[in-house]
Amino acid sequence: MKLNVTHRVFLAILAANAIIVLCMFLIMQRSMDRGFLKYVNQVELNRLDRLVAKLGKEYASQASWEFLRTTPDKISRFIGETFTEDSSQNPLPLPVTDMKREQSPMGESFAGRRHYRLERRIIVLDATRKPVFGISNPADIEIFKPISEEGVVVGYLGLLPNKFVSDMHQLKFVKEQKLVFAFVAIIMLLVAAAISLPLARLLVRPLKKLAAATGHLSSGRYDVRVPVDSDDEFGHLSRDFNALALSLDKNEQARRQFVADISHELRTPLAILGGEIEAIQDGIQDLSLESISSLQVEVFRLNRLVDDLYQLALSDVGALAYRKSDVNLADVISEAIDRARPKLAERALTLNILLPQAPVVVFADTERLTQLFDNLLDNSRKYTDSGGTLEITLEAMHGGATVDIKDSGPGVTGEERSKLFDRLYRVERSRNRSSGGAGLGLAICRNIVEAHEGAIEAFQSPLGGIWIRITLPLSEGYQ
Image (cartoon, rainbow, N blue to C red):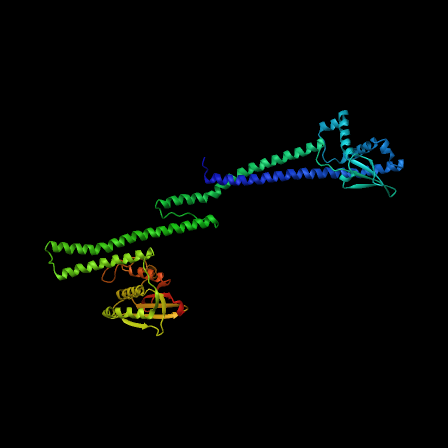
């Protein structure tokens, strides 16, 4: 049978509590055995002090230990007297039935057995430490209590300690305490089980929410979000899930927009081509150099769009070839400006160029850098009003080369600047081809710069238009 996560967590918590309770039970059991045995031995040692006093008085009256040899039952009587003296201080009162049994003839026999057990473990030595009474080995006894008469040691009394509890009443008391421990352990285990199940459900609740949200996400509902109710691992996981869902939602919107934009970009030239070819076939328009030139323009636009898409695709998969070498960036920019001058002059754009005389060397692909600056200059030409200004500067500092391209109005908003490097994005939502291309140029520029481990950003130009800043690392030999 397969268990769900709630039951697994419940069993894990219950198992942990069961192990803890079992360990506590075993420790308490062992502590009870050792502690109670220590207590019994201590009681017997206290009784031994009174026995020492009685033996001392008897020795004083007899003037020798001969009485223990001739009448050994005296020591049994002395032991019985110490039991009677302890009865008022007995910490473990007997049940009523046991008390009656103690007072009955059978009880007297039982008391005798108790005395006998203690008597067997007692040894008495004379002043020279020679055995006088007892069957125990003196070497097994650690503590001997001296027996004195008028300040003179006349003998020693030793008691072999209990190795285990043997008294019936003591055993009964220990058994009752162990039963209490077992009952408490079972109660604790039941309480742990009662607490573990709701606790497991509480712990698994965020996971269930994430599982349900993941199911919605896998079915295409990218707007699903999970509430963030804590700052623990589940909270971090919920935030990461929401970030993933937001990213997928944006990617889905971008995909749809990309498909719509590509369809638009392809449909327009194809419609023009189809219309002009149909007009020629129907005889409405003559097949002339002008009509062929018009068809060639639309074919060129289609070819440029397909080529840009191909460049982006190669860049995305890392298959775009880069042949890097040490390149003087100032020369690449200067050559790109020279190529763009005629078209810039057609729009009466004023050029302000500031390039350093010293070489600014970067490790780059000359062909890709040429494509980069050609795209940027062409973009400025298309989107800068006639009679405007274009300012281009190059500076090397802090181990990097910085290229700034600033143009005059019209400008764009901050939101539009953040999307300038998105593919197929154009500020003109009408996509009038008289003012620009398909919107792939800046996306290609960003891929080229990032392939050179650089950065490209867009700011508001102090001239009123857009300020494009490119930062490329200098070649190691020229830093």
